[in-house]
Every structure is written in C-alpha cells, then in structure tokens.
Image 1 (cartoon, helix red, strand yellow):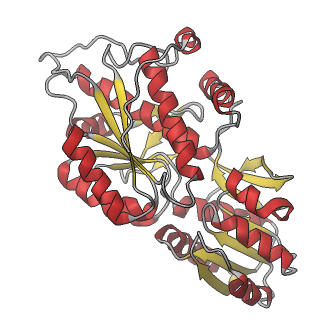
Image 2 (cartoon, helix red, strand yellow):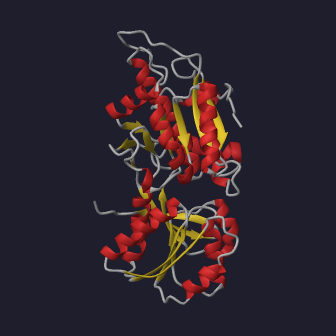
Length: 393
C-alpha cells in the first residue's frame, strides 16, 4: 500500500511557525552551484500495518502523516512539497524486502523510515548498498548499531532501555531476577544486555523463559517463572507481549514487582488491572517539556485522533521532520542534493537536530541518539512519569 500525502489547510500550524521556526524549511538556498530540485520530496516508510500486533504501526503512520501535512501546509521545503510513500512489511522480513524494492523502483527513494528490528535487519543491508538514508524510530536491537553507515536511530536502543529498566531493581536492592523475553532479535538484545548488566551489579538470574511476542498462551513459561523464587520479573518484550505476561503472571499468583521497557494502549487492554504497579523504562515524550513544539504536537494529535500521542507516534512524526531538515541542509549546498549520500553528509556535518521531545537531539557516530530515558509506573491502565534514569557511562 503506497500513500501520497497532499497539502491540507492547517492554519494553526502556519500561525505557530512550526516548520519555519525550529525547522527553518523555507530558508533560501545559498550555494555556489544552483540546487537541482526534484518535483517532490518522497520519503519512504516501511511499517507493519498488516501485522497482528499492528497498533504501533498505526500510531507510527499517524505521526508520519501529521508531519507531512504540517510541512506542506507551511509551504513545503523551500516551496517543494513532501510526500510519504508508505509500504506494509507485515512484520515479515521477506515482505519488507519486497516492499523496499517497490519503493526504490517506483520512486527512487533516497530516505526511508524503518520499523521492527527483524525487518530492519533484512532491509538495512540493501539500503546501505543502494545508499538510501535510513532513520529508525522503533527498532531497539543492538544488532543494528554501528553496522550501517546510512542508518540512524531516533529511539533509544536495547542497551540503553534494558540498563535503564534495571535501575528500578537496583534502587530497591533486589538480587534475584527472573526473565520473560521475546524470541525475536530485539528481545534477545534486551536479554543479552540485561544479563551482563545484572551480573556486573552482583545480581543473580534465576530463570529465563521465552516466547513469541504474539504468543496467545504463555502459561507453561509463567508456571516455571513462578517457582523461581525471584525478587522481581523482567519482561524483555514489546507490544503486545507484555500484556499477556502481566495478566497471566498475576493470575498465576506472582506478586513480585514486574519491570519492562514498554507500555502501550494495546498492552493495557490485554493486561487490564493486572498492569497496576508495572514499572518500565522508555523514551519520555513530555508534552509539557517547556518547549512549545511538544505541546503543539500533542494537542494537535489529541484533537485529530482522540488519544494522546505515544512514543511511536512522536518518533515517526519527528522522523519526517529530521529528514526534512537534512534535505534543507543538503539543498543549501547546491547541486544534485536529494541523494542519500548528501543527507548522510548533512547529519555527519551537524548531528544536532531539533526534537519534538523538547530541545535538541544529538546523533552519535554509531547512529544512535542521545535522548533522556524516563522511568514510569502504571496505575489504572496509565503510565505516569516518575523520574529520569541515571545511567553510568
């Protein structure tokens, strides 16, 4: 499925100066060689819209479409319209590769938003070979870090999230950890990092069980975890997996604290009241961060969709703006600028970009970003921010 987004009236965005304020997308070019402008800037996106666990993909798509609409309503990038070409990878690597090739054949895309670790691992080598700039706001696997020069992340990766979540257990003086993790690459990344960090802390790992994130029955695994005499249970999974684990762990009588790395509306729906007390580490999107952009985005998103924006919505909304900013910077240098190589040069030359989380985000040489990770606690199906995780260097 490919979607081309057209200009829509958005007077409130124009008034706020979003696109021309922190992202000065309409600044005139100043270059020795005149820029060779395309008729439209098409930004590709590979989302798991057809996957059973597709709520994350739904909010990713919402964020993308909002950003495109806002940029076009404010005049585009130096007067050139932006379009999003969205393909469904269905959560399947082979399908993702085919979707990427369609985007390349139809639109000769130069930039693409990736999602799902397993699909990103399959498509990133192709993008690298074809010099397509990649930005991933959803995958967390460390298997993607530092291996692809064209791949950047605007989400905290597994090595950061797992360590942040374990600060909860460390602060409480726990020693014995039981683990339920996904058998996917991101789950295994979380497991590896957490095992190393917990052992270095002097802790003990008393049980490890695994299942697919989309498993409909985890009773066997929970029964084993229940007998482990753990101080706490760590769930190294992403939506929808934690919902069922929380539900069955409490129904099986596990009373230990439970920590994790994500809590979404889908997890809340499955877990119900069993999610109360669950603590997790996540990128923290705070609409009241003191910067006007996060609040404008949150208010517009709530008005449009009836829900507050989740991290995935914020990351993919932000992703469009990041790529738009890199396009603008490349255009200033002139010549045939709408190329993956030129976008890569732009971010390497100036790795600091405005973030919808407030302030700036700084990309690191390995493609990861510096963002603050929050610790949250769930009550009545809602996660509440407690504090930022303090991670040792």
